[in-house]
Length: 493
Image 1 (cartoon, rainbow, N blue to C red):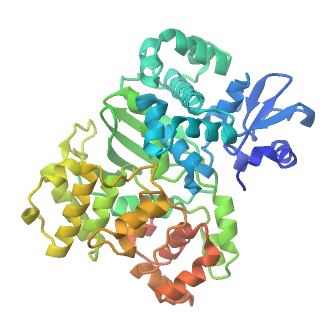
Image 2: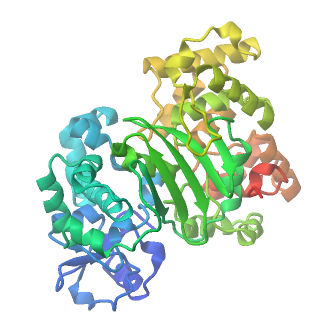
Image 3: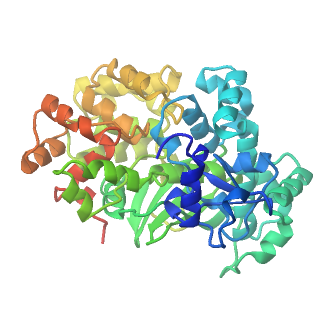
């Protein structure tokens, strides 16, 4: 795959004619005769090539006057893998838009977070995606509205507000323009759901590109789960979520063709953000075929990939939380790190009500942790200094960890903190910042796997050998870790 695939007409036509689902989200097909846009895998008979034009985003199709197909529902495609594998301005902007920043802070807020002028941001998004930030946010609002219309019994006025529309009229006009149906008609066409929906609670399906191996993904989350904040129950990973307007509880369950997601939100305006963060947590927008093809070129990794393809990088729903947990996990076992984190949660986390029981708190915010007495921390003095420095900088805003982070610059900032070595900085880059090329050559599990596989086991030599795995070294880490019998590598029973 490459940036700007929609400009390669011949390749796009082949993907549409073969109905290849791997390309869903990479580009969209707009049909000139019907004025409808589709995902590449649309089940209908493909149009004639002369009637197809290709767009890089759903928003671009909508800007050009095309309606979403009622059969393939292109608005529900997995997101483009580009935004998770790039660290440039456009990719960082797209991650922020997915996190709802434009709806909450407007385009000036988006530009301020990126450190550019609004004009620069708009120009670059328009050049690459055929739509500016407002149009991209509008497409996202429409998708959220459709989801609420089809999966809840909420009144339309409440849905319009929850999806981020300024008025009922704008909501009605946007839904009709994009989907070719009124909100009431969309609801009438939706499959009838069992049981009554309640405000703030809904179930949905999170799509992904196959293959997806859930073993290390859910195994890692379950094995490192912090009591009160996370748990594995009845085949689902459950956790609390700190969100812009309130809090939530999510249950994520792997199935063969999607991730089942059950969300309980204290404020429905957080729906879009909650979905975005859950997708990011599970790395659902990755392109596993491209990743695995690259890693298979190494004869040592090829058997590992062939044995269990589609491994994802387990990430996080809260970058600051993960950074704190990474420090707590320095030079201790997984169990000890969970114990340290659980004590902080009990003492400083915000209580939440879990209707199903089991979850009790949100993970403490940096501001709460910065206010605690250092002497109360049961850890060596040097790590206590590392911890207090980190939470103070996070609380003061001197260090910002988020979807908009510039990976190399943020890694350098982390390495400048006391007690931050390459392992801590790189594990944060990999799992919190989402850098797909982050690598952990000093990790004990990686070095042990390297020795068993006949790879160099010293950090410098292993890093040199791993150059062939770029830009997917974070995924190579998952395959190397999986050679061990640690619980992180197995889906809990």
